[in-house]
View (tube, rainbow, N blue to C red):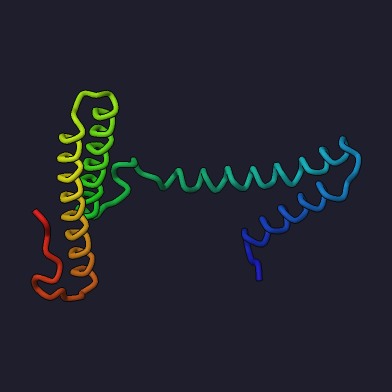
Length: 137
């Protein structure tokens, strides 16, 4: 059922649980629980070290440019929404202007979703009928 690292982690967690539940004396419990806790911590740190060696800068995580462009567009829309909320809350814009901005943001997000859906279907080889999902402007 459990093999390799997952099995070892399961055994260490089970041992830690049994120690915490069954050992009555606090000092003995702390001492006995320290060993499997340190083994788990060592395993976590070594796993983090392995992945850190392979990691790249956060801006370079996605290497496919279309996905990166869509993510950047989405984040831009999200930042604009929060800016609009802040401006409305501080009274720098009226509720009508905030409504106009959020309506435009909703249109932009709908267009972005349609682009992402179309790009995903195109990459998967699924043909979309023309005009099936109109892109709002």
